[in-house]
Length: 229
Image 1 (tube, rainbow, N blue to C red):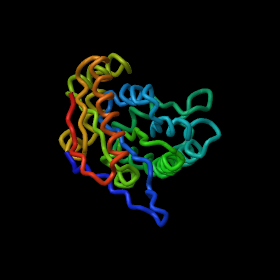
Image 2: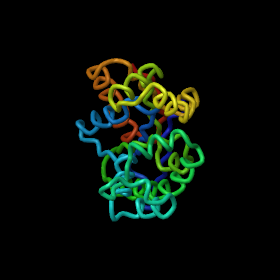
Image 3: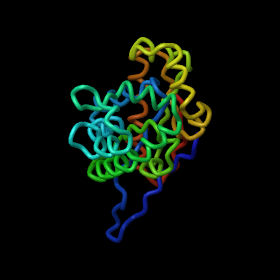
């Protein structure tokens, strides 16, 4: 796990130049990021989600979809002229070159929205859900601390097949296309292993909430990373 100081420097008036602690929540596919984010939201923590922003940017009439169609053609659309997300997602996980092209289009737009959203918050801390945080150095620069949601690949496989209706082969391809699990864990300041139930996840998020409030209150003090549960 990474170091855990939150370096905020005082401005000319003595106040912090960066008053909001920005926590980046990341993890592999089907690791429980949305569930954890929902728990933080129940505690009143503002959430900005890169996947939600991506869906907004690729809805009809928005710049992300316009650029994707210009690059990839209308075959990525469904009969209603909307992005066929399920079909495209499967193509992306099976084709690294295509995935790189799509990321090159969407990531700058998403990062700009993330940055603007985080800058607008006036709270102790906020959570940015960024699935590709470890893979994208520019995304990492947007946050002060990284929380990694982790779970065994067997659980990810089961969730993908039961939740999303993926086949064994497509679920395996999705996992294979992601950053190595150990690399992701090494990038985290805090690790939350999500292989239990909803009650355990909620308890862990409450503990992290208290930690992040303390970090926001005492930003100069070192705060070692924690591993939960």
